[in-house]
Amino acid sequence: MSKSAFQEKKIDVHTKLMRQYKQVPQWWFICILVANVALTIFACEYYIDQLQLPWWGVLLACGLAIFFTLPIGIITATTNQTPGLNIITEYIMGYLYPGRPVANMCFKVYGYISMTQALTFLQDFKLGHYMKIPPRTMFMAQVVGTLIAAIVYLGTAWWLMETIPNICNTELLSSDSPWTCPSDHVFYDASVIWGLIGPRRIFGDLGTYSAINWFFLAGAIAPLLVWLAHKAFPNQKWISLINMPVLIGATGMMPPATAVNYTTWIIVGFLSGFVVYRYRRDWWQRHNYVLSGALDAGLAFMAVLLYLCLGLEDVSLNWWGNDLDGCPLASCPTAKGVVVDGCPVF
Image (tube, rainbow, N blue to C red):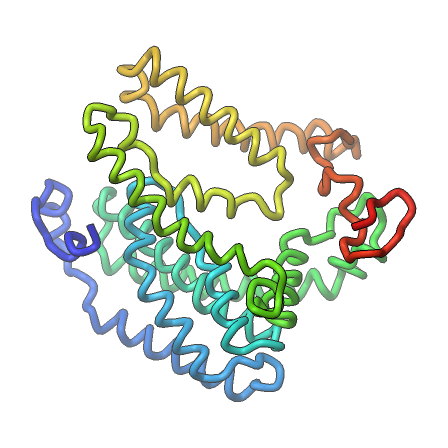
């Protein structure tokens, strides 16, 4: 499939119409790539004491992003799910450069977010392709939009940190404060786990969870098993619908959301899909995309409705579904021999 991505086979009507416009020269992309890599290396070397990431880390992160853009782009194009490189980038840099949490997070951003932004860029180009927007116009809109977004994001973050006291500090904020920053805490925890402590002390020869590394092999074999099952039972069409990268990679959507978000998605998506596909297959084939869009729109509509009806009136609902931990023993120690009231002793 990766090989066929470079081969232009059947030219559809959209491609014929888009050939009337001037294409974006390849050297435009190359110039932006070289300029950004050079500026990144300069920033990391000039602020080496703060960023901790050496020049070779920048080049390795860019190489990972370039290498994985095509295979993950194929998965995104066929399944609408994008597996992330966040864990693998943290794992690699944690082994190569342990004890440096900021360097680990910079490597993660340059290796993982670069690939994600590249796929988003391609998605916008695909939309412009079907909307018959000139490629050069799309390119300039992307470049200008990226610059504006970067300035706005930086200004907004700066303004929030200057105007909101104790932002993201859960120990000093009030219990009803919305500025707890759960995603930022996950980012910070990842820097400590993968950068400061390092994967070798957790999943390597110095840790106690080295057996988890076997799941890398399991993840590589899982798609092969589905392919073998499809070859062994060609009449079972449902086997070809199993997509292991999506099933395995979907668990990456869990943090920092609560478990109820994930289980609700599984129940609604699986049961509705199974019932409709089993009993109304013709309807499913025609309206699958509409059903998916309806579920997304319903979620967005309910979020706005709950904010207008409850959030503006400072009405909060406390139940097990919005409990961030959902486990009363989450704060208990796990070290052997430590005794705490109400906690199990290992």
